[in-house]
Length: 348
Ligand code: SF4
Image (tube, rainbow, N blue to C red; front, side):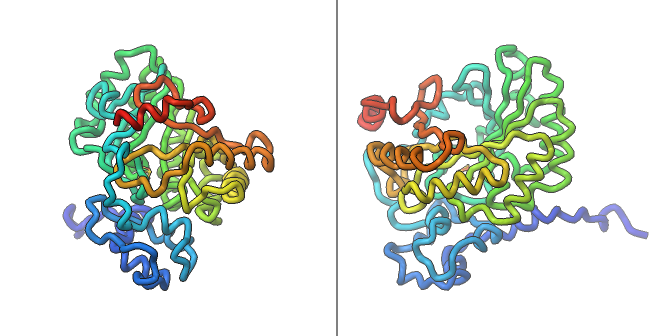
């Protein structure tokens, strides 16, 4: 007879892939046939923001290419240690926007839940790379404080699940949360900000689609892809499955030096995501987080690049170039930034 202790629930395929993520930069370089000495910069082996890369994502990097745009997004390098004025721990004012632990209020009608600090991949430019997640995520008390807050404010019609990456949480936990959100009458929309469909497409499985379909809320999933090479057949299939489940799909990207800072790369990205049923939404200017200055693209150059993108693509494939400014009631279109952007830098 099999006892309770002998019964083991097999982790889902995506959970196994998540656990096997590559954490050693030298292992990643070995897989890609790249000698560390051939890189223009020293690889960081002791970054407090550890490297983390799913094998499914590494498989899309070009062998032997030290300048691969996907590799650049994840490989810790010496530039991260440079102290650059204006680059700070919390560039978008997350801490000052916290209403209760794990709930951020920035924009009218919307509330953002920090659901977890975990991600499947560690993007070196991430604006939350030094966010103090331990005390500030909404799952900490089984969502109680967050749900009480949402119930108490009828002006909130949209809840955004963010993180970290909300889809690193298991389906039971997410289904429980979404069931509670369904029961709050003034909520109309559920939005998820996630990079998992791109970096770990196995996450879009039947278990996830089941609770998404069950919810009465309108569903929007904002994925995060920065380069057309991130969209392979498995990613496209995952996105199509979300689309077929009635989810509105949008993409937000970050304009990153050495990754996608030319009109050709951005055009290819728009075409690739749209072919998979996703509309380009935002292209963010880099959030000036400490350790990410080497990814910055000057606004004047960014605007020139966007002029070229507009000249080659239909309007619906052109994302809005924006910057998030701490305390602003909305994202700010790059062409309206004027001196406001520089004022933030000089006072940081
Ligand atoms: S997946 Fe998103 S939250 Fe996670 S490290 Fe990358 S940019 Fe940051």
